[in-house]
Image (cartoon, rainbow, N blue to C red):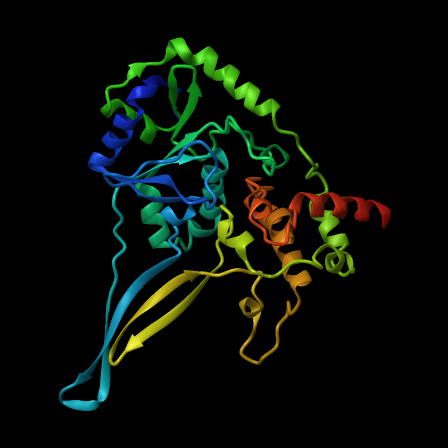
Length: 352
């Protein structure tokens, strides 16, 4: 962390700011296509959409939905055709990248990924390289969605944790403040106006945004409550209308499940990593045909348990949920994880 410095961008100059960000680096911005808002690489002619939280999180900027880990080719030994060698080529270099327009929940989500993929003993070099080359410019969530519950998991609409730069919309433009050294270095390149005169207004905007949100549940004791109700019919009742479609995991900023497959053609091929979801039946299906989590209730129990019990117990209390509410907003069956947790705590108290 560095001592926060502040700048100001007049509203009519923000488009110029966006274009300047893309001159030396790859830039991702949220773009609205019909009713869907997703992060895409910025190019001339693209109009970013910053008014609302993106439909999907920004995790694809560092953790692509599909990526080739390496390519391979089998080659016969010309002197002994029964012998083969395998040549492997990999590309792990990543371009300098800026992600603009994330909300605090998006940036905070990557801290969960870091615990898993930046393990000091076994770091994921593909994720690591992208993470090191990426910079996140987050916007204060001045108009939270009705489905947002970030305060319940220890965050807020102006949380800077995980961000490099934080932007807050004020009356005449945008108040910009640095969070990390990477953020400070980038802003020093852009020759922006001093923002000290707007700092009080920005703080007021943050406070007002924070007041708009309530905390629907208390996470204290939640890990123990989940384990207490582990072998009960609570989960069947709560998940009766779930479709097991997996949209909750695909849109989630903290879900990182993946599958790896080898795709071959003749003697060549590539190893591909793709997103997967714990809500799918086949995710835990073993080669023997046995599935330790055969029902949707058991799979959702695992999803909630991982976020609020298993992950916090392993990583010093860090909750693997950022409260973005995407899983609620986009669920076709209207499963509300807030209600599930509230019901769970009540059921745990009744069984005490």
